[in-house]
Image 1: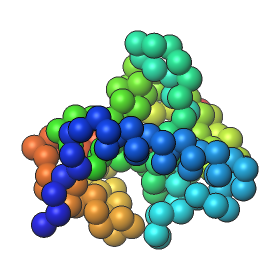
Image 2: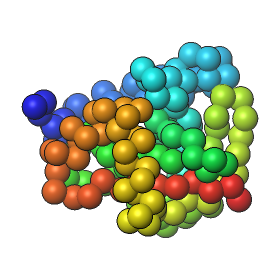
Image 3: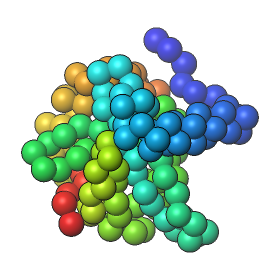
Image 4: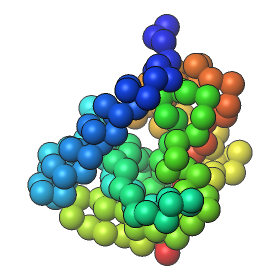
Length: 148
């Protein structure tokens, strides 16, 4: 079994830098570059800091589920939810970029039945999600982005 990501701030600063580069490359190429991680597609999630009020953009793996998009608040299996998850729960109306397309969406946590169904598909798409879940006692949230 692999270890969970370190809690050190230098590790997460590096991850943040990689994410910023990914956003720039994704936008320049319309998602042709930086738009996949292995078999998993990537979207750009726009959200507003619940305390700072600052606009933020986070690249995330997603699963298409009909006209809905599904994202996972894994943060690599750490014991805390990622900041974007808290931001979305405070301000669920937002926009995502899928390639060159912008979509207005409304975020909500998956119900337990939805999570069970979607989790299997998410792990098929990106097996590391199962590993991440094994690193933490928290139930990793699955977030459904519905068309607004």
